[in-house]
Amino acid sequence: MDTVFIRGLTVETCIGVYAWEQRIRQALRVDVELATDAARAAAGDDIGGTVDYAQVARRLQALADGQSWALVETFAERAAATILDEFDTPWVRLSVTKAVRLPQRTEVGVVVERGERAA
Ligand SMILES: Nc1nc2c(c(=O)[nH]1)N=C([C@H](O)[C@@H](O)CO)CN2
View 1 (cartoon, protein in one colour):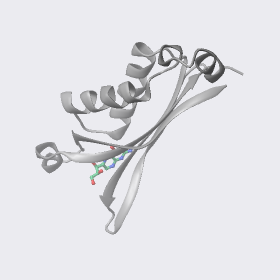
View 2 (cartoon, rainbow, N blue to C red; view 1 turned 135 degrees about the vertical axis):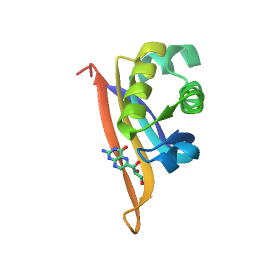
View 3 (tube, rainbow, N blue to C red; view 1 turned 45 degrees about the horizontal axis):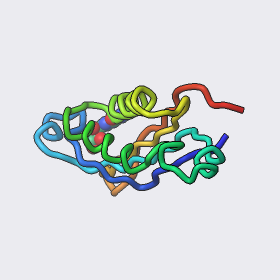
């Protein structure tokens, strides 16, 4: 199985379980891997034969812009479902990372994997 990936995409959204977090926007780092057939795309040398990672990145920012969330899990789940629904891929792994103070600056987050991964 081949993958297209996006690493280190920063999106801003309203996210957090505390009331103060629902009044601000915070940055999330999103890393995405999605299944594709790189040989098919390469044979035609055509963006139509693969998933356009630029379109995926724009869609994820639009999702982040359009709603507020309590949990990073919720954003990750919705982002994975959106990719499977709207792009030509059967499988996605998506990692969402948030910077917090615990009390020192720490990265936290979640990884979800959805769909069927071909052999
Ligand atoms: N499993 C999770 N635990 C926590 C989350 C979360 O989204 N998933 N969120 C918070 C707070 O919003 C925290 O990030 C504020 O700094 C705490 N635990």
